[in-house]
Image (cartoon, rainbow, N blue to C red; front, side, top):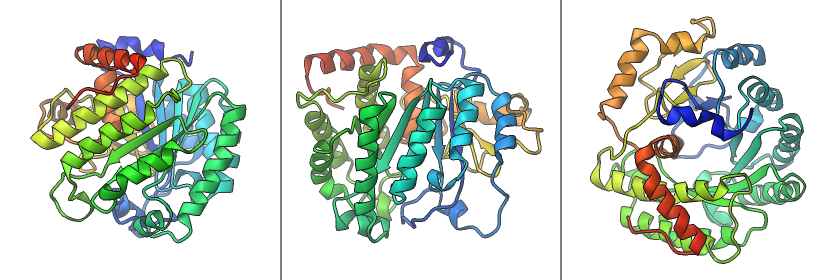
Length: 368
């Protein structure tokens, strides 16, 4: 029931969400200047977080899910994160449960990850530690003194867990922004030496390049660092994901980085976007969105809709938003959307297979 292959019909009929990003909390113990959720994070008051019982009703209104990503804020600040994970495991048979974390609570992260592994025995559990620099560079960028040391403690604990739990996928996520782009080569080399890490992702800072601040990035350097990442990662150690189809996911990552570079370079959408149809975003307040880049386009609040997601998606309002997105009026570099936009678009599969073949042969990726 938890196999990814049960979602194959969505290759052709894109009417059922397969990917849910759930912001479990807006609370965070960091104040990163590049945070795209800072408006909600720093706003006073606000609606209470969805309770486990409310989440259970939301999950019951959804069909099976391929991927649930628990976001925030810092998701490990939710004391009931294990219970929330179990809801989507049992109700929606999620094949993948993903937890990005700043790693600032290493003991909590390791303890709750092990509890999730014990509770959600049919899902692949992915924990992505944020690492945006080495040593004091990381602390300065994230404005968290001692943050790097805590991330390293979290890494050590999770790497030990991964030795015992084959379903645990430990990854590192590095934000690519103007503040660290010229140190990216050193970060890549550092992560390459970390034990137990199965993937390293470079995530483009949200917003369009050239807007100033953290978003003033050099796209040519992003392309060069993407190539360096591929070269360093494909170094004979063959550190691919351990789950079935893991090498295809690595190939998708390669193709995705090229598409992100081209999209931002050309400032237009290059492939169809399935946000609002295959992808949904649920905020801690109960607000339902098509994607993380359209906070101005809510489908409505699940509390007001009796927790009926299907009902919200059948509304005229949802139809207008979905049509607006499908028409290509926007473009972005959001990796979660590119994941489904590549995997569930048959037109992308020849390129995906070529990257897969190059991985098998130990060859570098193709040029953007």
